[in-house]
Image 1 (cartoon, rainbow, N blue to C red):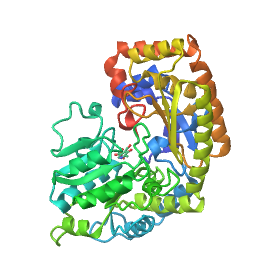
Image 2: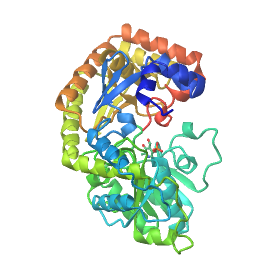
Image 3: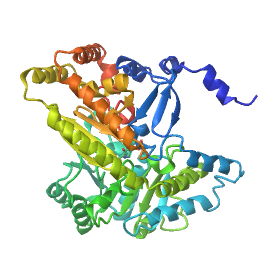
Image 4: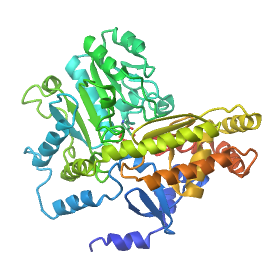
Amino acid sequence: MTLNIKALLQDAAGENYRLHEAHVNPRFSKTLHTIGFDRCYTRSEGQYLWDIQNNRYLDMLAGYGVFNMGRNNPDIQHALIEFLNCDYPSLVQMEAPLLSGLLAEQLKKRMPNQLDYVYFTNSGTEGIETAIKFARCATGRAGIIHARKSFHGLSNGSLSINGDNLFREGFGPLLPGCVEIPFNDLNALEDALASGKIGAFVVEPIQGKGVNIPDDGYLRNAAALCRHHGALFIADEVQTGMGRTGRFLALEHDGDVDPDMVVLSKSLSGGLVPVGAVLLRKWIYEKVFSSMDRSVVHSSTFGQGSLAMVAGLASLAYLDEKNLLENAKHIGAIIGNGLCLLQERFEFIHDIRWRGLMIGIEFAKPGTFSLNCAWQLAHKLNKSLFPQAITIPLLHDHRILTQVAGHHIDVIKLIPPLIINEADAHYFLTSFEQVMVNLHKFPGPLWEVISRIGKSALDQPATVSAGGLGGDNNQHGLQNA
Ligand SMILES: Cc1ncc(COP(=O)(O)O)c(C=O)c1O
């Protein structure tokens, strides 16, 4: 009997948490339950989600940044359905597939410099694994530099250049030769490169964890320093690429940056099919794939999957046609500037930083005595608790889905679909303002909720700190991406 997916989704609706507790990840389910994020979403469209009770939510998380073109984008869906109806041969393997050639051609056109070939992957972390392997092979050097607080994925190579020990604990030993330096520090980069053992510097143009934006000139000069020392400059644009920051690549904000490799993933397929791409210079390609024997020395069965390629082509077309880079800039400025005005009124708000629709709201210890006590109390209960005092009421009271931007940091990150409109931006701002009003009343009902959650985190440290309050596990706790 064929699967009737509509009937199945209807019959099993609401069973999500029971099934996950029994079969998938009970700890994460429990964490979601503890903070009241245990909703069952049954429909999504554009920038909105609907739960089983048909309540609508504004999605400021976009599946960790995979839905730049909006959830269930009808144009991308249409391309996929049409393609499925073509009975086109996929994964023949012993051929050069047309679709990956077409997508590679389109991607190259959007690069700021000359990158010659495109290696396709199934995820962001696989893109980073590829970049590490290629850098080692091309330069003959094992060393890879990464920045503190970096996030490049959680498979072994990517984890070796993860700038947060919490992710690494228990999984060692990792790749040898990896060197951590502070982000946005050219002197530290130069010192590390001076060893002569470094094959590459892998860096996010804007760090996802904390939404850290480097100084003007940092990326440009870092690329030049790498070149001078014979190392590759690899831009991880997995989250920042595909128009997220108002430019196709976030690198472009820093003028003429000349990367040796660029890694894309997430929104490249509009979130509908796993995909990734590594764009690289010809000489690197030639070192890796140096003979006929080595022409598939690095490859993966699903690497140029047709559905991913079709979704990629449709996503790029949509991005251009709807001028989403411009919209990201425009709506990002409304939200960013609106938040700056709120910062003047609410002393917990410490800093607002953004590029397009990648927005960080940082909180810090306030001067007022009672609020200072509240801050200390929250941090004593759990180092990741405070920012949940914002994400929780945003979800419960205003039906806005947001995330904390990393382990043990007081930053909320907003990465909504790039299609959000002015009404969404204003709704977010008035909702956030309301949350700030309540947060600045201590003692008050919001603080009671926070204290209850903090105490239950203390009661179940493994549960809450691994997957939730403390966990920015990749996608995977309540922050990531
Ligand atoms: C900058 C960056 N690089 C790499 C990755 C890993 O991508 P994936 O989760 O697809 O493996 C992520 C995921 O959040 C990311 O944000």
